[in-house]
Amino acid sequence: MVIILGRATMSMEFRLNFGKDLELLSHKISLVLLPILLFVIYLSIGKYAISLSSLPSVLFKDSIEHTILLNVRLPRAIEAMLFGACMGISGAALQTTLRNPLVSPYILGISSGAAFGAALSIALLGTGYFFLTQPSAILFALIAITITLSLSKFRGQFSPASLVLAGIIVSALFSGLLSLVQILVEPEKTQTIVAWIIGRLYAVTWNDVVTSAPLAMVGILGLLVFRWRVFALSLGDEEAKSLGINVERDRMLVILFTSIATASVVSVTGIIGWVCLISPHITRFIVGSNPKDLLPASISIGASFMLIADLISRTIWIFEIPVGVITTLIGAPMFLYLMRRAMHEWG
Amino acid sequence: MSGVKVRSLRFSYGKNIVLEDLSFEVDEGEILTILGPNGSGKTTLLKCLNRLLKPKGSVLIDSFEISKLNEKELAKLVGYVPQIHSPAFPYKVVDVVVSGRTPHLGLSIPTRKDYELAYDVLGRLGLSHLADKPYTQLSGGELRLVLIARALVQQPKVLLLDEPTSHLDLRNRVLVLKVLREIAREGIAVVMSEHDPNLASIFSDKVLLMCKGKIVGYGRVQDVLTRENIAKVYGVKVEIFERNGKRYMFPIF
Image (tube, rainbow over all chains, first blue to last red; front, side, top):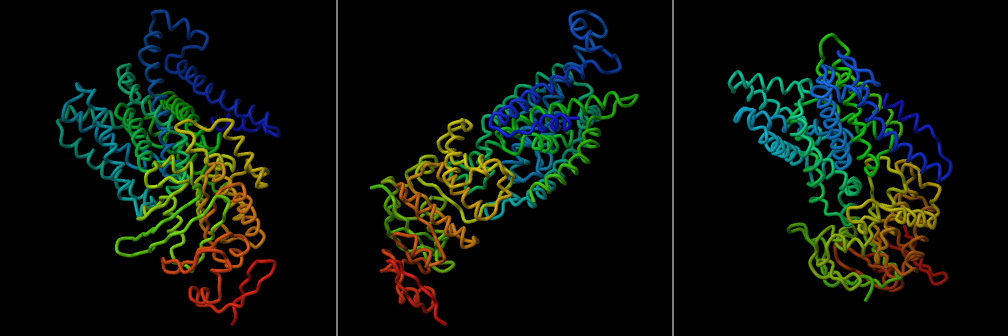
């Protein structure tokens, strides 16, 4: 659906400069409208259907629909969008900065690191100290990505293959540690951790939204502000340097913002795969590879992707199917298709 | 003094000495061509002038000591065109060219003015028709010109080019070198490395002949590209002809 919309705007072929501006504008408008439209649809569909026309009245009238809308669907929709936005922009920023379309916070071990950090904090302190869960998640996200980068650096360069390999190793390491935490803690905490690992969008509360939103915003805004640096970095280390970029510092800052964005949502929802890999690729398909446009647009596509995936996850079957299953089932074949297309374009 | 002034430049990788005591000058408006066999240190020298490598000795650009400048200040003075560029993403040509504005931008993204400058430079190099093409689909010659365009958009005082004619056919080689001569005439100091002594002779104001990290000859073409020097550096006997004040060299078998 996202692709169809993208194509519809893309098909406005241009011949004149004016046409080009118009095309850009129509992209921008549809990228803003798409998640809003999906957001409204998301709120109305579910076991308790709330028709679009009655949405405003339900919002202000006390009823069972009112409670469902305000305390269940709304926080869940917002958290889904936050997650998608963070993952979309983080994936896009990492792929561009590291010059590798195959990487993502998930593949480089950032997500596993964050998940382990959050679990460790729950295991040691319990859920009562939720304000410590996020710093712990960010810390271990940074530890994970640092290990991945240092393992894959060879003669000062990150080779694409070694990055992916190192990421898989680090992911496996932290997933292993996570299992260890589950086994070692008291049974009642195991339950909390397991429930949280599966991907916890089904029980998201306003409290979760409030916990994850501020840091998610810090990560997203940081990456947006840095998006031209991200472009310069993607031209290669030596060329970025000769364009006046402090390569090591700026690359670390991009990774820091990515880790903050990723950890802020993963520490609340647990690991939901594929969104961070697939969203940037869909976005690239619509607005091109330049991070100047790619980074803002991938926020919108990531959020939209998650809204669709979560809508499917809670409506397609009599009981809810974990959203991670849906993102994988949509993401994997889509990725295959986009990769094959990209191969043609890159020649 | 504007241009480049190098005094007793030395560089080594650990104990392995790569450049030994080099001194030379390039004025604005001049082309200096660095000649020498593979492994003689041409690329290393260019990278030292751009501080991609950190040499000992003094490099003055526009009378600034480059070791005292920060990355941005240096990038406003020196443009660099690498020998090989491996594209990671199919960016549009004009976006790659406008990236030359980076040292002038800070954190903001390029404005309409920056894009106008990029289109201007593309037009001057005869590349306007490529502006919206993905730069992954360019030929070798076109890509080289696009990278030169990017360096020009940087509006530097000095332009460094690492073998700008390598892997190009004769037409594109001459095209690139003509463009460089025009650029130099507009008041930029051009320093490039080259493998073909004849092209160097035709297009440069000065040559720097290197062997194993040392200067064998430096100055006007007539004084440096002699039979003796070429035999010494390349181990090849040449016959020398003069025509219209240009010097041409042919190997003898």
